[in-house]
Amino acid sequence: MKRVLLPPLAIALALALWEGAVRVVHIAPYILPPPSRVFAAFGANLATLSLHGATTLVEIALGLAAASLCGFAIALLLHASPSVERAARPFLVASQMVPVFAIAPLLVVWLGYGIWPKVVVTALIGFFPIAVAESDGLRTASPGAVDLLLSMGATRRQILTKLLIPASLPALFSGLKVAATLSVVGATIGEWVGARRGLGFLMLEANARLRVDLVFASILALTLVGLLLYLALRIIERHALRWRDRAL
Amino acid sequence: MGAVWAEKVEKSFGTGSERLSVLAELSFHAGDRRWLTILGPSGCGKTTLLRIVAGLLEPDAGVVRVGPAAGSRLGRTAYLPQEDTLFPWRTALENALLPSEIDGRPRADARREALELFDRFGLAGFEQIYPRQLSGGMRQRVELARTFLARRDVLLLDEPLGALDPLTRAALQDWLVEVWTEFRRTILLVTHDVEEALLLSDEILVLSARPARVRDLVLLSDWERPRARADRRLFEDRARLLDALTREVTA
Image (tube, rainbow over all chains, first blue to last red):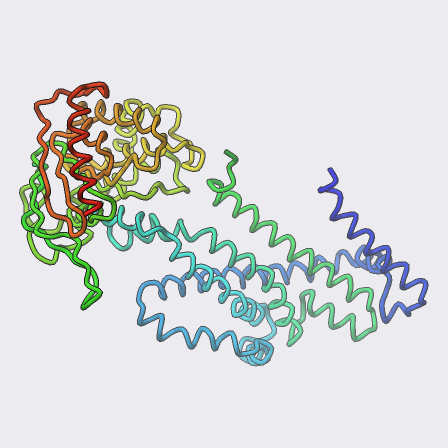
């Protein structure tokens, strides 16, 4: 009971401190609104927030799906041949050195103001942890299990689908969860650079109008979107790896 | 059909001064549906020999043949590696169906066959259980069920009972004899347990310390199975074999 109650209690305490501090020190609400005002703004603008949130959620979902496909495909390619791995590694590392902020405006020029530049930014940020995790995961199968399949006369493809990929799933899910948290950042950046919709866009607009309470409400909404995504992944993981969680 | 020949097999690992000779001029023959046990001190190259027969390694010199046809041995034997090779994400039954999937046999037939074998192997009721929920002895039964379900004429078993406690081990030895009597196959069993070798085999190939050579060939086919652990012959042969093996280790 204590374990269940502790996290919400801690959050409530933090919020109470925030509320108290703002009131006692008399901080202007356009600098730092108290949580009560943030929640009020969240409630009052629920329709707007849901509308923009839906756009952001679609961007994140598409971006994450693209990141998963690319990350998985890259890991398989790297696994398929050591020379491909050697040739591709500099590009992979370089792709993570390029600040995504720097190419986001270019993407707007190339792809317009719609959801696609955001999807691409999200995918660019998310594919790397997935590719790295899956790459490692493909190496987790035991040599004895590989021997077993080889002795049965299994093909390379069978070894991959029957053994290496299933054995890699725990690692893949770790990568996916990292990518999911990063994807919220990706979509937000994408929207800051140029958008007509989305929580990032709403945030900028509210900021320009000094509606700091609405900025915080947008952040809250983004956090909820991220949490939702994370929970969805957890549920899929629980199901996919049920052999691991089953109690003795 | 399921005979295994090995003729002057040699194998070493590494190069130059690091070169380690593992098998030296090793020859043996295991007849069809016979049980040949390979007995030798730890680290003498028994596993290497089994991996060569399975086709996972090629000898540096010499010839190994499984069955009548020459050529690659991969896919011709059912190899059970020493380490735990059950796939943890598959249930016991799904693990046992793995060979049929590799061979591309119809799933319904393979399933029916596996369920019958599970019944015979004392695994009924454990079909949908994941490996981590099974005891050591049960896991070994599932691994052996999978090995039998590979439908190969030759089974290569690398210390299948080595990790078990003595009681479970003894129970599984008896069980293995029972199962083998019913589903006769050619078996090459690697072990360093002298009693196990005497209880189970038709012939025992005694190997020297590394590099492994054939020290002795013990013929037991005149001895009816199941063999009693209290049998006089077991005591005498065990003492003799242990003597020979300990001389190998201290030499």
